[in-house]
Length: 142
Image 1 (cartoon, rainbow, N blue to C red):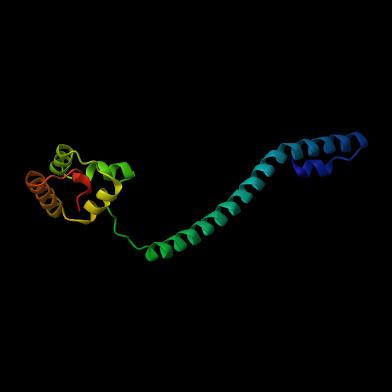
Image 2: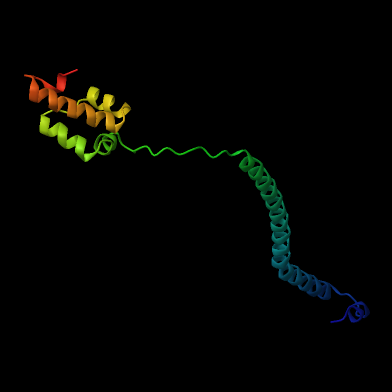
């Protein structure tokens, strides 16, 4: 019905009830879209807030990345047992086993600070000494 026709009709009690019911029906129909519009407005506000926070975080990250310094990486084994297995050449290990010398912590530490060439020369000197002298404990020879 048009609004002009509504105004032309005399308003009676039943007509008022009908109009009120029609109005209530339209309000009910509009309720859900209004709630959705309200949610959309709230979400748009939240999106803008999140965008603002994101810009701030990206700016802060850029500043902190500029302060990052690359540190040199040392090739250190993950486990101590890896040091014991891989630190000495096969030649040194074989010579020590042949001479019956156990690789103690003290000997290992001494060998770790010396150059491999020095360790090989020391083993050769020990072999020479064993051939020319009566040495009871080659591992304890100093």
